[in-house]
Length: 334
Image 1: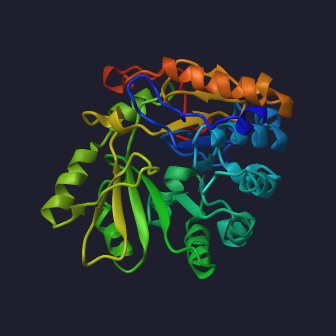
Image 2: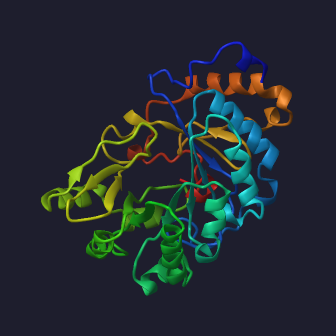
């Protein structure tokens, strides 16, 4: 990119003064699970075959790295449904400036494939496990795959991954009685269990109203049991993380309905079709794909990304029941 030989940019900053070292990049909107809070009827509306190509992803990541992004998280849908998933990982690993490459997965066939992900260059993994009870897990996801996912987590540890994050959407009347089971699991495992507050989307309003479980309830329980909040890294996600001297693992709480949740926002999102999403619950995205067709377009791409930050709102409007254009979280990986 010609401009890199002149001077380095100031990085990405919005009008609130927030900086953005972290990009969540969806590589497909296709998911093969049928989670009751997201896709209870399966993924019937997707654009898997039109997702960004490997070359388009390389150009996109190169521009974001130039603008100061150091951490990329590959999401979906289920990102590993791409047959060229490891090619995507390889190409991003060749981009200068990217220090951390993470992924979020539902764990499908993880026991057989996790070593190939790590060998390709993945150095951090989030796995969705909404229950440690096989019957409840199947009821939530539509798949009887808990055993293979847990084996995949162990395989990742055996292959040298020092820790792993597990995402669990907390739901009243579904898994809110399993907190102690999760805590006992991480007593002897270096796992960060992330309890995610159920979020309302355009497609789950009735489910949300019935099963929303405030993250503050878990927070109060942890504090009463002697858990202590940790400081977050600059490129960390939105979780408030807690530790306890009796546990190898940690607990993270993602509470989007809490006061000032958006104050420390440090991440941007790009959909699998090349739309820059300034917020998970934005009404629409900003198209970048037309500037991903040639390496000669890098200067224009950088300018469009930087200029787009002026449009970023100070926060979402979930507390007002406004979910933007997000029908379900598989659209852009949450």
